[in-house]
Length: 131
Image (cartoon, rainbow, N blue to C red):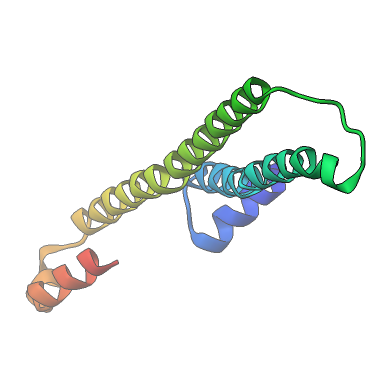
């Protein structure tokens, strides 16, 4: 895991926190996408039970309350994983962007004033704000 975070940090020029947030975002995205399979599995199980008398197979009868509670639990799991994925992916990205802009501003602060007299400030500003 540490090697992957180091590779992400090096490849995308991220801070330690930014690489860690990116790794969490990737992990939560995988889990959130897998969680979308749970409602389909529940639907298949319900349809199997509904069709068992027609198909002539004997299945253990479960009540509608059981399937309703299972559906609510699945909904809570899907919601939680998607919330964690959104928070890790997007909020982490915005925070890393802020850290990188502050770092860039600190680097620009150390440049001599003569550097800015030789450049078009509107071009420099659009370049910085565009990244």
